[in-house]
Image (cartoon, rainbow, N blue to C red; front, top):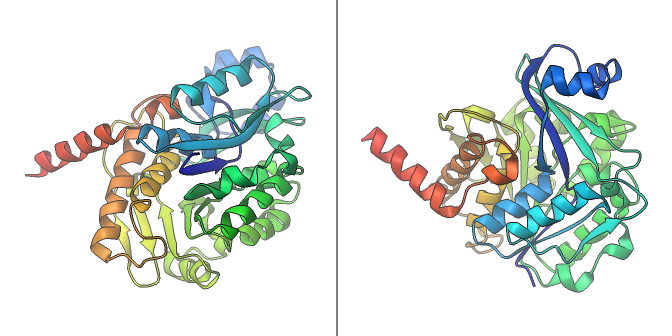
Length: 338
């Protein structure tokens, strides 16, 4: 049985390196698919935040499994093989005959913010059901990781919440990356925030991106927002800040860790590489223990390195680093600063 389990979306990312001025949804609505592919030069690759984390953990040497649903179609076959090739256990990845594999079109706005348009009607990922959740599979693990994309619609919402409850009841290390995508929700301002906070209380570790911070915490202040999360039961709050690095707060220790300068090819998935590396290190520690600030800083530096390396290649899963990659990168950084 896997030591770590991730649950959620596994899909195909169609991404472009070209910057856009108007919302991606507007571009898609006013152009043919052929025009989009030519004008924006979309390339495609396997994606989905929880699936990326499962692949990242596996590439770091962790026995990891993934729970989710894909279409019984060529894209679904590719996605399943991609995780298999990373040594992720896919025995609980189901293929749905009545829906297609979900697609996500990804672009970067001129202000560097990500713009993502999901192609679902419905997508197979949101057809995960409570009957697909295996109690024994989850309860035998040590780590459980999820996000909020699968909470946006039923029946995957109920399936993920069922899995979260099983993991919590069995005292797993609970990791949550909301990965808030407003275009997915029927009511992003109310329903999304309510469900994000409803599941947040189960998290031991919560990793949020700086661009979603104010929406989720209702404040732009990292210290003040962290206190809300810590008061709600989270043990460690981490905020990824792109090239600026990250912020961490466990109620005793807190601080900022600078990022690494790299030649960025594709920033999509850097946060997932960060999460995988952070969990890889936290799995070695006693669950619930307050770590010395020096150890927390070491873990954050390691995770920052993984996030930076993920940006240096196209396609998230192929770009996710191994432990050897991170070790070499950090040794080179040390040599450069000597």
